[in-house]
Image: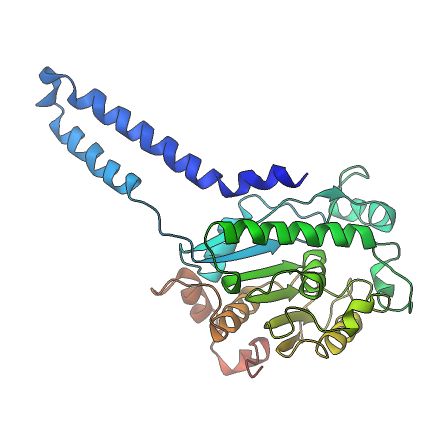
Length: 320
């Protein structure tokens, strides 16, 4: 199953190669005929210039971010949106893997109707045996699929390994996710075999918090910066659940930052202000690389008052 994801790291190179071959062939057809050379000289010049642009080697990847989506969410061109919204530079490799399995149990029978999925095809990182309102309420009883979590965490380690093979240092890699993907992000922070640059969880929680003995022991990433963001009005993964997660994990991670978004729900926690807060946090910890020119998103923030003192409640506290 894991080998299918090898294509994630070769698509860009293949597309670039195909484009280069196409341009080179087009240029050859124009200038190879003497009688057409003079007539089509302007076109040949344009094509040669385009060749130079296409064939220039892309910037070497120096950073990487792995984004883990939430339950059932498969957004086309997600990596492009993530790069644009965060203003990431081209030196950052963005990886948005597909889900390795379909959900069963509670997720299968309670969520598909609301999300528009049928019972046979709800993408999921792991299964849950009780509704989300009761997360972290049963001491010693796993509420999420233990085996699923282990396999998904190993899969994320596999993706990290692939980025390292590309020459990206482990300390320059960030794992981030939303909702169930955010839950896997926090789980992976505890169980990963690699010490990486940072973790970001939006609207997530720690699965099996009261039944996983690993949360009571130091992890390899105990000094790695972690950001957990949660909406106070979240009615799917309750704020109390997220707060319990933060209290437990802050005891084993020395740089754990829990951000409460007062007016946000599970769905609205991802918004321009949150994204800007995440970017600020990443820059504070010297993680990833960003475009130096003013981006479209900064203009958007300025237009809609993200720097207005009245919006300070939506901005992140970057003390930790």
